[in-house]
Image 1 (spheres, helix red, strand yellow):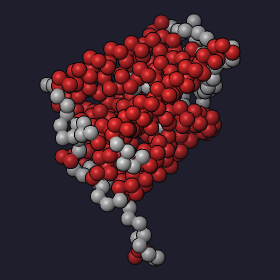
Image 2 (cartoon, rainbow, N blue to C red):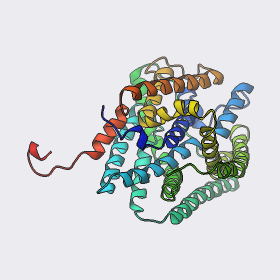
Image 3 (tube, rainbow, N blue to C red):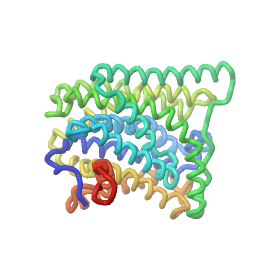
Image 4 (cartoon, rainbow, N blue to C red):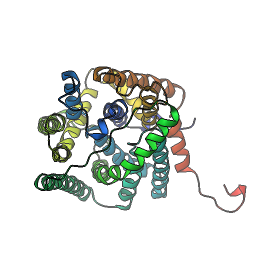
Length: 387
């Protein structure tokens, strides 16, 4: 495989942050495969074990809404770095990458995971591309405005549901499947149902993170050097306790509180709290990377992050084999503790596989395909000689 420039031209901290984000995304996505009730709001707390409820509370508090946001920040950051390194016509390069991601996202959503985010990233990325030369401060302001607007919308709808007594929106449970054909049919049907909510809810939030990440890149964060440790500690102390307090309250509402408006209210609180947690996580990891343990942590996370696209789809493929009719069909058959163990084992396997791949190749299979498609020169004339 050919691939991107040598590792020396990469920002290893970005790769490590991206690998960290992949672990968090896996911890969130696994429940859509393992628990048939997850899309419909989760199991009834009155019939669930205490261990299952504690794990669900921990996942909602520490993971949901935080790591896809971190990944989106890095996507926006990377778009600026990519455009700066691409030379002439960077807009064409970015646009072709978005087309590739959009098509791959549809395939991924139909076949493997109905909650695919790649198509939404492609659509939000097109808006980011149209932002052109928007100044960093304007990007940050717009990102904050979009985030607060989405939170206000959710809280307002929750209030209207509460006052009007209408039923809150919830997805339908996903029935376990016993054959590959049944798994494909169920996934494709669910993808068609959930796609609008993914695009119109996660899309604006992804765009906000893209804008913020691109602003950070334009302001020179991590380039040429990581911020001073005193600055990182200040970010952790200011952002993480506040964010986790809001996230914990949102998780409590999501797991234990009743009422048709509660899920919307919990999501609205989470939308505001999650950016604080995400920024706090990022600063915390950068501190770890600069410590004595940093080399070992980087050795695990950075290779995984370099192959983020391949690893993201591989996660879905493995989870399909474990939990759906594509393979063992273990949906609803594993306790929450074993589901968490599946996540840890799968991510550890991906970290090891990523290191082995990068020891021989410059990049992974999907990263190579994406780069080849994006950098393919346009035809100059008719006939094969024009390729």
